[in-house]
Length: 489
Image 1 (cartoon, rainbow, N blue to C red):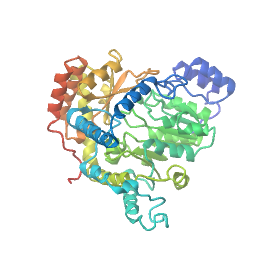
Image 2: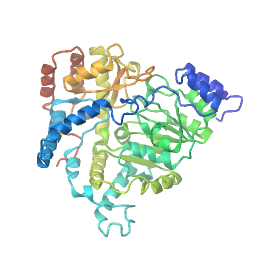
Image 3: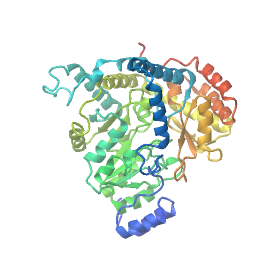
Image 4: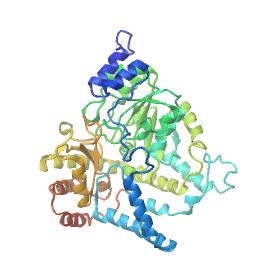
């Protein structure tokens, strides 16, 4: 239902409400009222750079790089190559055999996908659209064309999409594409800020949208990273956004896409759904289907829980939007794509088509069991207990009373890899933890193993001897060295 003039709050009223909710500082409100420019609420920004003005790099980074240079200058190039190779092997050995990885931003590939990355296609040039590249490749594109065709076919099937832009090299680029292709300078973008669940600099004036002087406004939010729909409707009616962007780094439950679709229709906006962390759950059929429910554009990562190499995809069912984006990618965004990653992505898409439903189902079951174990057995303050903790791969824990840096450091000493998360009320520093069970699930763990994982975290936070605890973690991981939900090679 469209709003009438009588229903709408004045611009001043909307900004005052934002200030009262802590979504903007009073000074920012006054400045925006005076200038009549859209407001960028101050819930969280990317202005907390770790280096001082005038420094090209952080001082700590300069000191570290100088130390590396001093070390390497004693070596011949062949020795440097051997050293770098050993570092890569050491990192893989440490992560796979010694670490409990609960980082949502990371994933693990099956042996087949990892093997095809080692290919000369990494340096071969294939530009344009499959089957229509003309003479750009001098007849050498026929293999890569079919690889790209496989990605497009599988993406269409898995995400219910007609049009696929398969070439972005990261999810950030997949998000930047619609921001730059579908807007004009000064357009307003409503999106999730870092505080209430967002997590991508594409939706910030220091990201790609800053090049077009886009005005970013935070979506009003509620607890557990939910959306305040009445406040969103009132704000959208005032600022008339060109795009409404939902999806981010911290997500526990499906988004109200249909309700947001109604709001978007009222103001003539398009909806972008960022599924960077949710692609596997969507493709596996255990989560919502964004394009079916009203999103205009779907973006996603091909890595993280999806199980492929780092990359991004942009999808839509709108032919007009697709044309604008597909025409912009080459040469505006990408001249040369690393085709070996396309081969690995196609392989991973096929694995998701085969194993996605089982993998996604087990992820959610594990996450729920993990949340319960952290809460009821280990005494952590886990969000959304009354709602079953989560419907995704993530569990969010409030550690404000302990401190995120302390918890992260104690866990790292025992080879437990975790990340911080911003909670409701956080302005800059996070006071929560974002814990993902996706990688543990792909290594074969199920609900029965989740209490043990929760117990390791509690023991680390209790400052048990990290050497002993790390050894126990390594022993615990011994039966879980095979990647599941993958084709045998």
